[in-house]
Amino acid sequence: MAFTAQDVKKLREMTNVGMMDCKKALQATDGDMDKAVDWLREKGLAKAAKKADRIAAEGVAYATVVDGVGVVIEVNSETDFAAKTEAFLTLVHDLAAVVAQQDPADVEALKACTYPGTALTVTEIMQEKVMSIGENMQIRRFTRFPNNTSVAYVHMGGTHGVLVNLAVEGDIDVTEVGKNVAMQIAAMSPKYWDKSMVPQADVDHELQVQVALMDNDPKMAGKPANIKEKIAAGKINAFYKESCLLQQDFVRSDLFQGSVEGYIADAAKKLGGKITFVDAAHYVKGEGIEKKVDDFAAEVAAQVANAGK
Image (cartoon, rainbow, N blue to C red):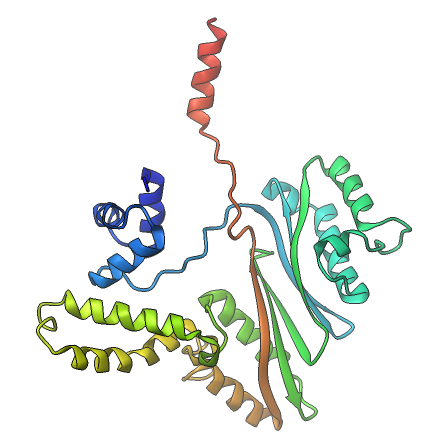
């Protein structure tokens, strides 16, 4: 599998490792990005990298609670300019309300729902919006939490939309708790909510990486295999602490020093009730969507060349 200079750049952005080492990693793994990340980790050059693609589309990731129903939705536009217009933001807010109130099964079902205050479908309204705003728009995804207590958080005007769902016992207001947990999710992007959710295959993979890391360490390479395996097993808690929301260090250390689950328990005790984390949804605007990158200089050069013909 061949790789390009863009692949080297992407690997560098994922791992914060130098360009030459990233190139060597891709050469050693035949251009496989995931294997290249592991190669760098096994050489002790990189920590675990986030595998999500970089943000590559405009629009809004929006979260809200409507009549007790939590909704997070992503709607994409062609430009950031359009995404900041009042017409586009009103559309996104109305779509979130439709999801909450009409409970569509998926995006296609949402498009067939009736748009608020009209006799038209969502699809028909979006067609009108495309004509008036002058850009293509797409509803990409949504998540709906109808039960328990949901708390919504929108970061930086819609770069992240986070919805946290909590089971609450006692007459307590958990808005601040939910928002703090949502901010943790936006800041740290945990791969799992709890260590109990980590597949055994992922645990086994992490053990293999840790053993390989020791194999490449001159101080550890000579140790017996069973000793390396025991040391690797001891480091799994560090993996959980990095990858799992409830086991992560709570970023608001000014409020609580310890894990996120410790913060939730402590906050519940202070409020005089009980709070249990149930679920969450985290949307990053444009995550995983490829966006056309125009080479302005090349475009101008082409126009000049064509003008002379």
